[in-house]
Image (cartoon, rainbow, N blue to C red; front, side, top):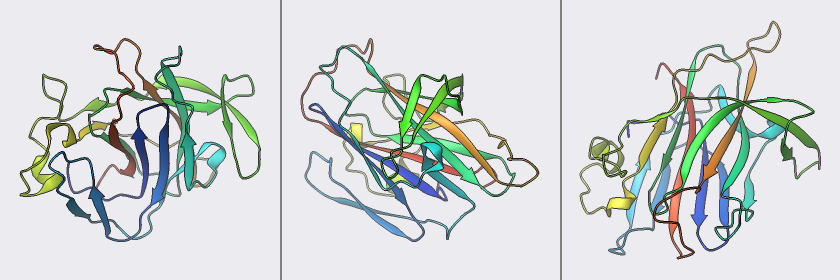
Amino acid sequence: MRKINKTDILRILRQQGLSLALAFIALFACVLYTFAWFQSQEKLQTITKVEAPSTLAIKGGNASDITAIDLSGIGLSSTEKIKYFIFCVEGSVKNPYLIELAHTTNIPFIYSINKASQNENGTFIYVDHSTGIKTNYQADEDLGCSYINKGTNGLANNSKHNATYGTYSTVQQNAEPLYFLSPSITPTLIGESNKFCDYYILKVSWEGVTPPITNEKETDLVYLLARNATT
């Protein structure tokens, strides 16, 4: 991964069994991560440079501030093999931006992101748990994200290893994250202002995965980032 200037990070800590845990983290300083999924039981500590408060922010549906969301609705034994999560990118400048999803590969979920819009007849419902307000959304066109470091075996190749881990070489193969990058996005401004709030639906699917995902306990990290396209 490139040295990414992060604005807000959506972290999904996936605990396979019958549930996932989702955390949204806003970072405005240098942050120390401990990656605990190494089979060698060694702990890698990576310091990621993060800019001071930016004009971009990732929020929940209805532009609500978010700290933590329980994703216990994801159950691998369920007949439904897909789940949807609504978020938005909010900002106060009209410059293009990018959305990037980064994830490790212990669990072969299939990810995609669609643009979305508020629609009272929409089938996707976001509940603001602080207010109880429900908002309906419809899924619009696919955002067109693509992997920038995916090998022929479906796992990450080495092209982003140094940017992610530096010179640290003892990395289990599934801990090499894949990076799923959007094209440059021109924000939809609100009225005559420079403010915008663009909605999206993150789709997490395990339909048709071969071999089928089982309920063995595995852990993955997934980060959703929004950043200026010019950085």
